[in-house]
Length: 373
Image 1 (cartoon, rainbow, N blue to C red):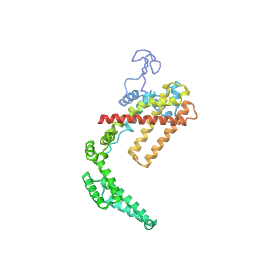
Image 2: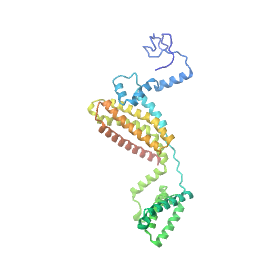
Image 3: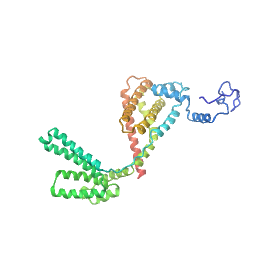
Image 4: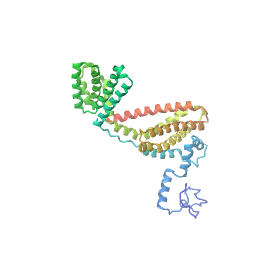
């Protein structure tokens, strides 16, 4: 590690032994000048604490470009050039979760249908009429044309109904039911059913409101105890969704860390004929996860803060990351385990890890849910 200017004297300032070159052969302390610049002191302190020196970059390049080779060299005893796998993983994972996994605060805004939106909806219906007319459907198949227009109209009305307040929805539903009672229209009954579902969902914003609505329902229409339990969970999750999501993202580092030994176990099961120690599989897994974190440190901020998570470019970047993961895993398994046919084993490892990830996420979600309740 480059640590500054070396002293010309050959006595060790720590133990007093004779120093032949740059390091004391007895205690290992570098024979450095005591005086150094402020920035030199800061940079050397950080480098020493995180082992963030030339070893980091000597490890970084082959780790990303030569999958599996760093692990092979490290286990073969060629360790002087590489940083310790755990030290590198800890440093990179800290940076990763600071940069890539900062949860976004999403504000929930009410939907409002403006005059401009209504004009666009009318224009959409007019456009449909023109297309149907050009195709001859209005003339030869008026029933089909009517169904198409009615479906579009219902979707538009559904969006408008969602934007109303609870009392406005109640008034509209009451008026529609009166009209349906007089006309007995199938299309009107269908609209009432859809609107009633939206209205009930708005009404059940709290579990108390849901129970109150259940009391006024006929006996055969009331939910049983299991349905009530599911509804309570759904309402609670919806009301505290932002807190639960943030807590879940906050615990991602623990989830990844706990799953890493399990991933190493999955790899060991698939390559048990190699007859190597579990620790070797774990070091291989640590190197792989570190490489993934490094790639994500560069790609996630670009997706989140430059192009946006829903943009086409972000989608392309995400696909590129998935392709890179497959390429990296394929080559790493071939190099480290000295196998040529690894596709089947690689897919099995991915499936096992995905199942484990989802199961642990479900457990975390349940724990967070009960704490939130």
